[in-house]
Amino acid sequence: MEIKILGTGCANCKALEKAVLNSLAEMDFVANVIKEEDIQKIISYGIMRTPALVINEKVVLSGRVPNTKELKEIIEKNK
Image 1 (cartoon, rainbow, N blue to C red):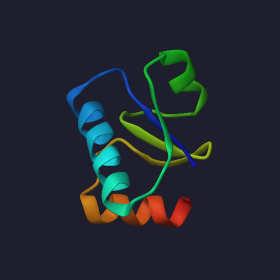
Image 2: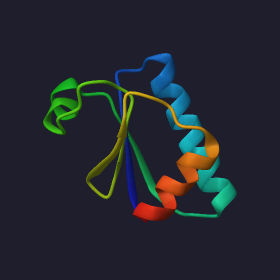
Image 3: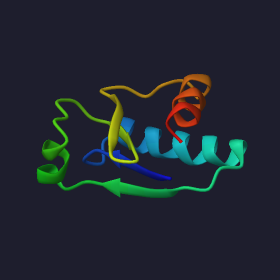
């Protein structure tokens, strides 16, 4: 599984990265987590608001940081 966190380094982007890493650890999932800060690459996903979460090249969330329960459900659904 490949997970990309799209964002330019804002507080919410960092919070999403931390939440993803914590959720993966709690779920005992192994994933390649990539933090993408290149604005051109972010735009190429059609993202209008960051942070955004991309799992296996599919945008699954943008513009907010979900709570832990929702994030785990998103990861499970898109693994």
